[in-house]
Length: 318
Image (cartoon, rainbow, N blue to C red):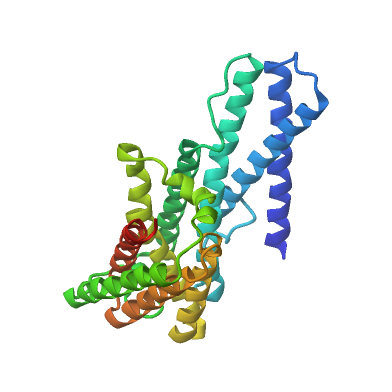
């Protein structure tokens, strides 16, 4: 309870400091701006910026009094497994939100100086920048969290380890076979249950893929390689190990699979059959994780699934 109260105090402090700092910035840099409504919106932006910085500071345990005391025994169980998923999502969301706050302030500064705003907040470049910023923040958090767990747990291939260790060749072959099977299932779903393309094209994720050529390369790298690796380390690594330490591998597999499917609900709710292949991929990743005592075949499966699903969508969806 004490740590929760301290965290709430830090949250209020960050938000208040952000709002005050923004008010001072307006008064010093733009004394001619007197519109009360605009002023309050900008103060709110400062408070939001402070909130996002608080979330990042909390995720990286940078808040005195709200983190584990130095020298205290490190615990690893259900709470840490749940925090593995929650911290990953919070770091990703806050990383993208901080960039949005900075760009919003930049646009206001340009407009206040009677210059043209540079950021189109509905355009593909802005959405891509937010995704990249979020992925960078999430990647840094995952690396930091793994260091906190220690090399012994990270390299442990057992049920309560992260499984970052070598796997036999059969593991990667099995991952490739499973990926082909799941991607073929994706193609069949598209064929027999075609999606509503008008609804899908209105999604922010769809606008991300409007770019072509070199401009699309960063997104493809994130979607096909970086994202799958991070998600597997979090869901089939950190979260699975933490839950398995108390609930056993069976329930750990069920819970992480369901949470993984729920995490993809914003994009799949417009095409419910898509939950089938996401669930299959997650379940197969758990099987690979347990059978070959390594997270790496699951990462290969996820990479091939994402790349193959994008290819199937291009071939079957018109």
